[in-house]
Length: 152
Picture 1 (cartoon, rainbow, N blue to C red):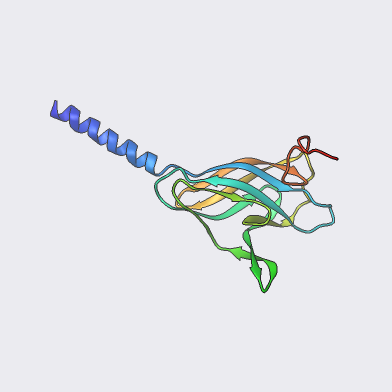
Picture 2: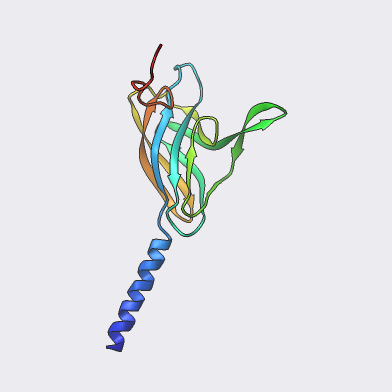
């Protein structure tokens, strides 16, 4: 009976440990389509940390892109400027939206500018948590569906 109790307690503690170290999840991934003459573009996503420990986003890779950097937008002397980040910390229970006007991914060394309607594999790299890959859709703007807009 004691052996059964200890075995159950061990499994409970092991399960708790696994749940506390849940992997981050990535959703709402998309890539901005720009004219084909543009040398760079941007990608966006929402990252949720459902674990009990801080998670650090340290990079990304995208199919057909030579280099991906994490950037943020900051005001400097009254002007908005982009700044490269080495990492982006995501607190336990927090969702961080990488979105236009804030933190985002800059895509350099494109094989070709992604076109609206295409999709690409987007893999986010996390310190100590491996990588999470999702499909990112390509579109021109943050709004996927303009049908809800009212025109006067």
